[in-house]
Image (cartoon, rainbow, N blue to C red; front, side, top):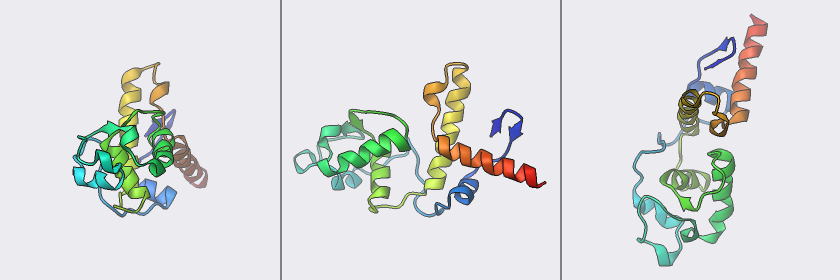
Length: 149
C-alpha cells in the first residue's frame, strides 16, 4: 500500500495483527461460487428454490433485513441494493454463525479490489473508497513504527 510517501505491506496477516480478527474460517471472496443450499437459512419459505445466484431483497426473511442493511452499507460499503448477492449470503452466514468466513482474507481481497478501482478511476475515485477505519488503523500503526525506528 502506498499513501503519499508512506509505503508498507498489507496482507491478511497484517489485517489480523491490527484488528485481532482471527485468521479462521473459509477462504472465500466475491465471484467464487456459493452452493445455493446455503441460501435456505435466509429465504422465506414461499421463495425456497425460486432463486439463482441473486434474488430480490423481499425474498429474505424479515429478521435478516437489518443485518443485511448493515452488511451492505457499512461492511461492503455499497449503500442500498434491491438484490441479495452471493457474497451477501456468505457474510450473513458468517455473522449468524452458520458458516465461518476468514474475514482478514476477505478484507484483504476487498482492499485490493478497491485499490484497482481507485487507480483506474483517476480523479473520480471517491465512490470507490471504503474500509476507512481499517486503512486508518494500518496507516497509524505504520506511522508508529516509523517513530520507533
